[in-house]
Image (cartoon, rainbow, N blue to C red; front, top):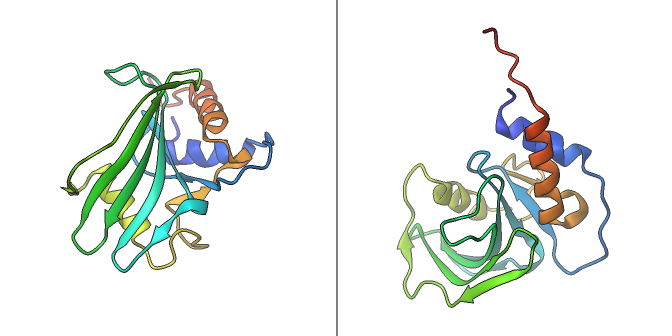
Length: 167
């Protein structure tokens, strides 16, 4: 089986569905594995001295979370100097994309766990040329600018692969 990054890049290359013009500018992040696909909205990134405020969306590929959500949108502050994050607001969505629930998020910032998806996100958003790096291998423009459509296409690509290893 191809590694998940190759599958994600393949899906990004093949996905050519167009979407209506919207204000968001979604990019697909190469973090985690095949259980979820991560995205950020470049159009709404806010930078201050050490803090990056970013909308991050996560779409689960195989199973809902323990509360039954298939997708989550979070407005996250990443403190690059302190290596912390704080989800300011969080919304969850059903598998069909309909709204499930929303809440205020975290009251205080939390430390980034080493060697985690959180650390990969921190390294990505704290890069000097984030969010529009031409050399960053951690993210690409999301085809169709629609994370939900892209995730569905990505899951179809994963499902179409077969294990070619000798038995």
